[in-house]
Image (tube, rainbow, N blue to C red; front, side, top):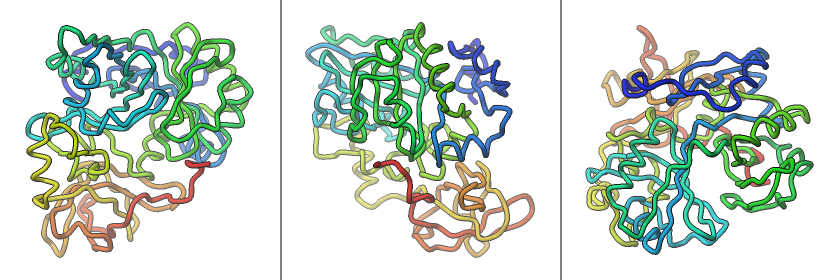
Amino acid sequence: MTTEILDQQIQKTVLYKSHQALNAKMVPFGGFEMPVCYSYGIQSEYFAVRNDVGIFDVSHMGEFFITGPNALQILQKVTINDVSKLNVGQAQYSAMCYPNGGIVDDLIIYRKSDGYFMVVNAANIQKDFDWISQYTTNDTYLEDISSDISLVALQGPRSRELLSKFTNVKLKMPFYTFEEGSICGFSAMISRTGYTGELGFEIFVSEEAVINIWNELVNAGAYPAGLAARDILRMEMTYCLYGNDIDDKTNPIEAGLSWITILDKEKFIGYDRIQQEKSGNSKRRLVAFLMEERGIPRSGYDVYVEGRNVGFVTSGTQSPSLNTGIGLAYVATPFNKIGQHISIQIRNKHLGAVIIKPPFIKNTSLHY
C-alpha cells in the first residue's frame, strides 16, 4: 500500500455494517476498510464462487463519466484499446499508459447512450482523474461519480439463476456487455463482467439501494466473499492486479496485455515506446508458474534458472483447486518460455517450479 493511501483517511463502503454483522475481518485496501474474509473461512468463500455463487462488495472501485463531442477522441488518446469499436451496451478492458509505456492503471470502459462510463482501481481514483483531466478539452466533460455509485459482484456458476429472481434484465447477455434495468425494484446497470473467471455479473446501483440488494441476494443464497478469496480466484485466471503485476514501471506488452494494445488506431500516450516493445525488444515477460515442490510463492521472491537470478514473483498463493502453489512472475528473456523449469527462493531454499500456459484453471463457467 502506498504512502499516499496511508496518508488519506480510510473510507468505508455503505456495506461496512453489513460486513460487521457477518463477522468479517476488515483490512485497509485501496483507501477503504474492506472485508478480507468472513468467519466461515477463505476456502469456503473460494469454493462457493467456483462451484455455486458468491457475492463481493467492490464499492471501493472508482467510476468516471465522460461526455461531449470529443469524448471518444480523448479516450482514444489516453487508453491503449480501440474505443471506437464499442457499440452502446458493450464494455472493453483497457489500460492507460505514461509516455514511457508504464501503466497508469487498468480499467473497463462501458459505452452508454449518453457517454462513456469508466471503472478504475480504488487506489488510483484521484491519480486517474488528474491524468485524464490533462487531456480533456472545453467541450469534454469528465466527472468523478465514485461517491454516488455502489458496486457488488455476483459470481459463480449459479449467479445467473439466482440473479434472475430479482431483476427484469435478460441475463443471457454476452461477456463484456451490459444492460440497464432494475434489481429488487431499484434502478441498476448490470454488467456481464467479473474478476473470478466464472459466470458472473457486476451490479452498479445507488448507495441508497445497495444494502437492500446485498441483503436480498445473501438471504437468497449468495455466499459473501472477501478480498482473500477474490485474490486467489483472479490469480488462478492470471488476471493482473495493479500494484502487484502491473504498475508505472511495467508496460502492457511485457505484462501480457498485447491483446488489448491496438497499434493500428490513432496514436495513444505511450504508443512509440510500446511499439518498440511489441517489435520484439521485450527483455522480460510476465509468466504463470506452477510449483513442483511444496511451497507457497509470495510477491517479491526471486526467480532462478540454474543458479542465475532471472526475475521476481509479483503474485503468489496456494491454489485450493490444484492443491499446490501458483504464481505470476516477471522472467527475463529467454527464460520465460512455456515449459521452462525455474526455481523460487522461498526463505533459504530454492524450490522447483515450471512455467505454464495460462490460466491455471481452464474449465470454468465463464462462458455459460
